[in-house]
Image 1: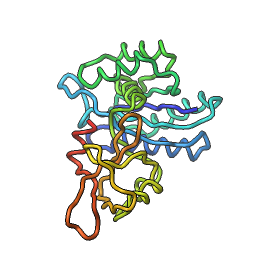
Image 2: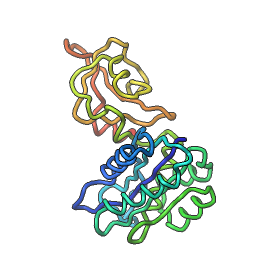
Image 3: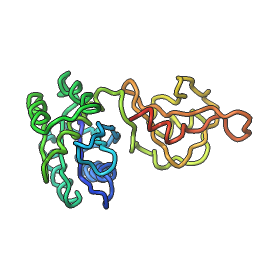
Image 4: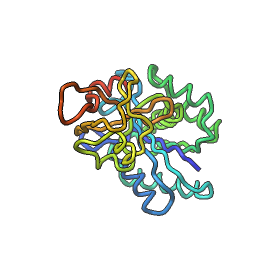
Amino acid sequence: MRFLIGVDDTDNPKTSSTGLLTQKLGIHLQETGLGKLEAISRHQLFLSTQIPHTSDNSAICATFEADAAKRSELEMACRSFILRELSSGANAGFALASWGQITAEVFTWARTAKNQVLNRQQAIQIARSAKIAITGLTGSGDGVIGALAAIGLRYRGDDGRFLWLPNLSLLKGIYSSSELMNIAPLNRIESSRGRAPQPGDKIEIGKWVRPVLREGRCVLLVEEVRNNPDFNWRLLGMDEVRKLSD
């Protein structure tokens, strides 16, 4: 069974990010034999002075494959790990849902979190109506807002960018398009206008590799390079990827 694990507000301005904590969580769950970590994505939420956040008010979702019978064990392992690893002063929230539990109300509400101030009680009410496990772990517990929004946005499939995928961190240098598709679980490689490299075209990989989520697919964005003898394409720049995925 495919599970969505939403995490938010586990850090403070002086500590490492919720994204890094979620990566550690996913690897921990996998190493303890609970299942297989598939991917981790970042989703930008509404920026407002009314919403306390450390830097950019983003939330994180991990997709995790596990036996349905291990659901309770998976939930408890997530809670205990987050509580152990979160930073002091955090208002951490956590949500866990199977893929089939995401209702229209959940992903509609998640989209709203990108442009409106929402409240904790509404997040809890919507999650519970869909039988999604949700908990404010520390502080105000307002992290449940981002945690629920992250799983709704990830399910919807047209928002955010991937922070972790199998073999993603290994990519460096120059590869053909077909080589990249074989190394990392990418669905498409294309420009921002939808133009795709040929299988043998060479692509330069920079230091910041962040595929985006489009139409439920993992898409690596590139831009064409002319008159270069070593490669035909390079990854789209960080600023451009952020604009397209936030």
